Length: 426
Image (cartoon, rainbow, N blue to C red; front, top):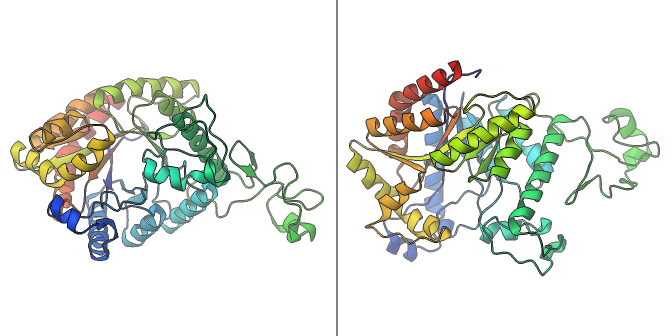
């Protein structure tokens, strides 16, 4: 496998804390509460620094906007990554991920390349497609993007000058097409001395047919003399662009792409050599693992089971199983009742909450022994090279997050390392 050890990533879903729902209502909009965000940002840094000391492979941020309710206040992944880069020594920093149905791919390529330089290669880059309609549809309007879970609107053109939504193409297909084109541009920007692109959503240069024909340094021969080969043609018109700087890592940092079980996403990742991030239960991940390996083999990448793949798990470890279940209620119930549940069309009550949450297959909850045995069972089915552990800090206190991370690294990771090593030998 090349590496027989599990690569753990800690990911915070930044949730500004309140004592209960009544307080969240009284303080609305909690997402704009300056004091709460300042406190959360400081403690978030402490968690990442603790992860660095504990030996975590990576620390991940998210991209979400407009969270007035205070549930996922994470709008600026590049800024957060740069902040962490200055605070840490060994851990890799990055986003899981940039929502590429809304982003400018040139800016993403530039910012992540600079972060890769700031860390001297201690970085990674994650992409996501965008499932939250409130902000994906607004921020992505210039591309005609709509969220993967947004109601389809096929008959009217988008605002902002983007392409019209065809009647025979659904929102998910449009989102996927935009994301794949945007990622292609990022990869070109990282790896090519000068690049061009003529796609459905982007022309580089613009206009692609004629190039930029009024670039003074092209006309004066400066770009032709000092720029990248092919940037300008004989008349001095810009025909390609050179995205600077190139990443510190050759050819580029590790790339992840989040998915919720779509075979199309896994096939795409396998063809591109991208690390898929599974927001799924273990049975779905196990099935898609074989699709990933089979597709990658067709591209000449002969990976073993779990290699170059990442499984996501929310985790709560307690002194007893009952204590861990109570932690789910204390730290996760609010966001599940008022965000995840409604997004999935489910109603949660205090009586059914823990069983409903655990029933998704996304959680591992219990004593150290229970969580260890649960994850060993899962890794025997799907020995993923990476695990992303998600915590709802700061609703979950900093000390509790760090305690969970410490117990995982001391008591659980060694057992998973053994499973991965055995799978590699097999």
